[in-house]
Length: 326
Image (cartoon, rainbow, N blue to C red; front, side, top):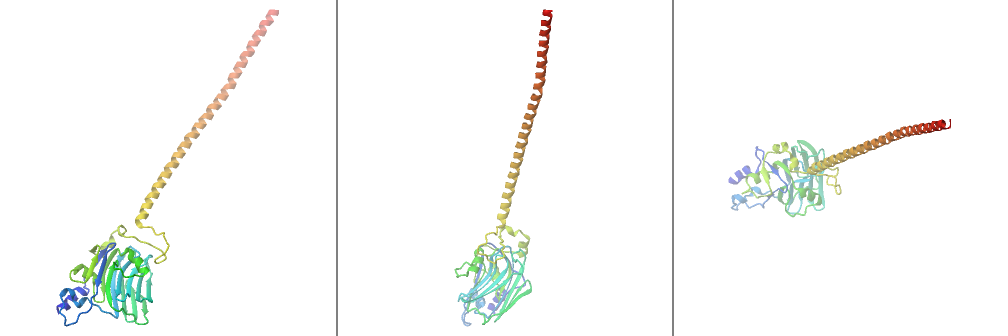
């Protein structure tokens, strides 16, 4: 009976929402243990309530807020290297990736909008045997039937945020995992287990490991704050993009805008200086031409005066001569 009470208090979800803010590199890993025989004396810290051997179903539910893409939200791996990954692609679309064998990978993409938009989104993934359903924000997005029956061999661990173990991730999951998850996760549920609640409330007795900074907080507070301070958003029509280098960082855009504004101001200042210099030069040139024209006008007048004086002198001399001969 004590073990049952422990399962209800720690393993199962409660009415109260449990949410936490993840920073870059934050990782919450919940390890599933092998089932113990019923007759074995089990300590409280290693209780079999944390086991979930080879389930034929997955009931996953959680809410998230982020402005970062790509990012890895949830990763479940089995002892046979099969995995289930929930991630955001570079363009903000959501992908659910099932790898049930090395030769068989099922990829389901939900691209109805960019989910890295700082708004709360609610995701539910249910698989019962062959039937898979995915709901996003209370709307049924897709339904699919696996063939043959999809089933993990033995669940090994569940990770929220960045996967820190060397698990041989496929290339697309590795790209999403490179940045981890920056944002808020809330009400995380996998079958009867609440890994986020175990990490926040029962970290000393639950088989859970936390790396990096994990802060219990309401996701609504993060929605109201400026997520740009701690996140990076990429946007592209290609989910992961191989060669697209045009996605600027948000802070880099701000910095580039400031630099461009400064350059424009300098260019305008230089143009005004050039206009002022040219105006002064033209004014001086015009003054010089005006002075030259004034001198040219004065020279003929002086010439006429001099010429009249010479004529008068000649007339006087003539008159003198004329008087002398008379």
